[in-house]
Amino acid sequence: MFRKTYYLKGFNKFMFRNFKSKMSFSMLEDFIKNNNIEFSTVFNYEEVLKESIEIKRVVDKIYSIVYKPHIKSDIEEVVLRSEQATSVSNRNFFETIKDPKLWKSKDNVMTPEYVHTTINIDTIDTYENRFISLLISLLSEELKELLSEMTPLIQPFEEKMELNLLTYGEHSILNDFPDNEVIENVFTENESIKAKAYKTAIKLFKRINILKETEFFRITSKHKPLEVMPTNILIHDSLYSYCYKFYKNMLLDDEKDKYLNDIYYHNYVVITLIDYIFKNVKKIGSTIKNAKLYFDENGMLHFEKFNFRNGAFKYYIDEVSDNYLKCETFYLGNDQVSKKETNIYKSINYITTTYSLNDEFYAKFYNDHKLNDYGLLVVTCKNISKKVGNIMTISPYYNNHTSLIRNYFKSLSLLFDCDGTIYENECPVCGKKEVDFETNGYICHNCKSKYAILNEKKNLLWIQSFRRKSE
Image (cartoon, rainbow, N blue to C red):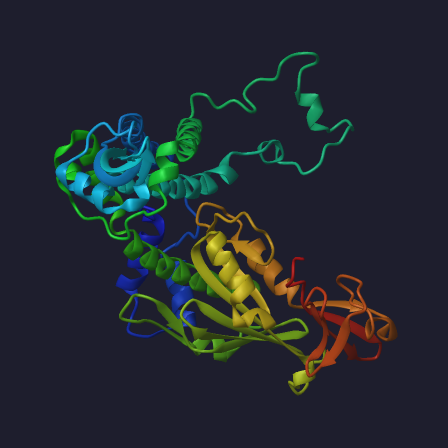
């Protein structure tokens, strides 16, 4: 939340500062080459450690508050058995006299069995304590995001050893390890800044989870303040004041930061996509070279619709709204002369970008969104949801952009030899027979995959959109 996305912010400012009012794609590519612009960077563990220490300080204050919070005393009017009432005011006395249900005859004498009285009730459900619960929740989300960024950067065994399977021959990595001894310096990074930052963050996350299990949080988190206003306690009590200042200085601009982060990230993904096309597509036509890009008044990058051909397929990429791109794919075959782009050889897929993908956003994209009728890919920098279906994590901290984008276009252009009769009735993805023919091909009502059977010299199966339904 309060962590600044220094790389993305700097990347965007540099581009914005050097952009002309409208820049062509080819000018952009020359600009990237001439300035040696890198699309990945080293994760700043020193920054994380510094911020984790700041969080630790405020978490220590929160623990002190939770174990000895400010308590508010309320006076409540109740009806008690007469022997339980410790005091009865004049007003309580007259209310008791007026209430005949409370009186009972005993030895022909009317006496009050119950009386109206007032009692003092102490409660921790105060405005200031609700604010502390809000702060606990915000810190929990911040640490969750932080760990989602750091966890993939803790190298597993295969990455450290630069292998993807274990072999047993004379060139096996096992030859480098001693016999019957403890192997050191593989999974231990006790002195590294990476290890310190990760251990500090995971310890803080566990401490926050303990706070969320307390009675304090259970009571005061039910009605968290929508807008935090300074009160006498938040300003003058040393513990509460520390938490309030932390919130005001570090978390108050969170919504603005989220908006800017989404813009910065969207621009980063668009420029990364254009750079990939120029470097990896063999047939770059004049249409894409001359297409224009520009920044709007909010700093978001926009571009004109462009197309390019790669192998037997032609792609048209366009904006449909902020953060949403549309990719239309046409099968043209391998002939030198392009076939007419007919609808039956066409598929439509969408790409949306979001800096941080949590469970709420995941539900929005995949359960409620109208674009669910098409293939929808969510590109994110931080996958907090930990879902994997139709999600691509493009981060400046991972140097894998090329393979990710290549695999995306590969997923739109998979062709297989096939027996057309079988797959007119059976889904090639999930194997169910809940298949219907539509304008642009077949759709499976079970997994929502889309595919076409192309009547070439031999039948070809083109899977246009893989499974879009996880159940």
